[in-house]
Length: 342
Image (cartoon, rainbow, N blue to C red):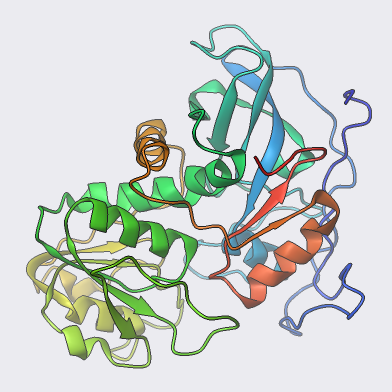
């Protein structure tokens, strides 16, 4: 496909949909950010850059919140200018390279994550990106899996690395049904940790079954059920309300044993964590090639699997972004123009 005809994904604003049944419900009070870019010119790679063809694009719940206009006081949801071209995590192939790009060559199968940037643009179907954000995709890992793993898997790997748990440690994963949560659970099992997965009591669809040996806890049950139990709690709590004693982050903190670790992937930890002698590293979405390569290797050898709930063709991508607004646990991948699932 020539540079002049490469299509850019147009993501509709909240309230519109390609679904004949009509748009999914959304926050009526949210501002209408307008559609994404209808065109995005291709840019030749400069020094330290490569140009990629996008074969598979992961649709993230955070991008859904951006498109729905749901910002927050902690800056978790970027506030980009609109119109906006999304796309943080993807798999594809190198098409052109600039100078000083290491071992990257045209034709290489790769994955890339740009983190939670305000102008990602991988949904353009092509992108020129920093070469040091790009990681080789093993032959045994399909692009669809790679697109999920480069973002959600990298974040999950870094969450566990931040705590450096020992085999046999007890771990509670508070959002175990999300793509990141499912990968934290899988990676924790691969590290021989004792895992409790907190799953939704009610959701738009059933939660995927956790791996064998994983204890599950309904999120309608107070975390007091595991109070002081965990050497490590990994949480995606994103409630940006006042950090009162009723904030769910305090429940997560209560589950951590003294001198344990609370890894926060969204909202910062409560201030009284230090008083309880709990370590509180905060990990956010960002490129980390070593963590990405580690997760891809585990998938390539069959030790863990990539969570993929749905694969949709390029024309149906706007609906996929609507879906993650209503179901942030969904792991959806959009195939690039002309790409196949394999």
